[in-house]
Length: 162
Image (cartoon, rainbow, N blue to C red; front, top):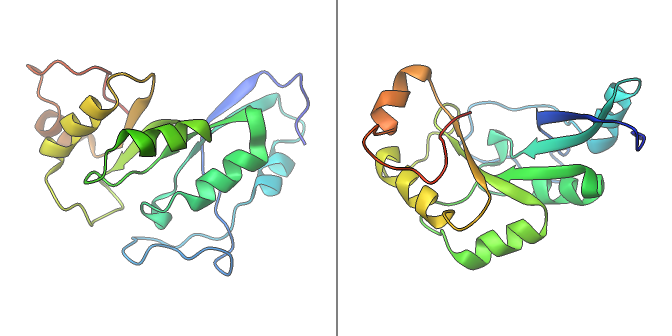
């Protein structure tokens, strides 16, 4: 386990349960082996890492169960970035995720292919839904897609990025 004196923050890690514990999303572009909380701390032993940002892996789609479980295991040493259903952006969902340590939403345009509506429409809606929070939006995309997705004349409440 990391010690209290660890000052470094690992700002993007994925925790993956064994497939016998949690099923992977049907529409995924890859399958990954387990990567558990204890495996992470074992790999970080001897480093100054004491805090982490857990990012929902694409292989789970919108099922944040593994992320939420990992946040519980990491305790106050972690914050999370969840994937949400753009058709279900309600305050109660964000409140529940916030209470569990989530502070951002991930929009994945590279390894998830089940987007129902164009991202040009969805991103501003997510931005608006989070406008009164201190959350961020992490967009995973090809750099060449940036001009198409982010209208430079639109005023966003948070700066887009990955």
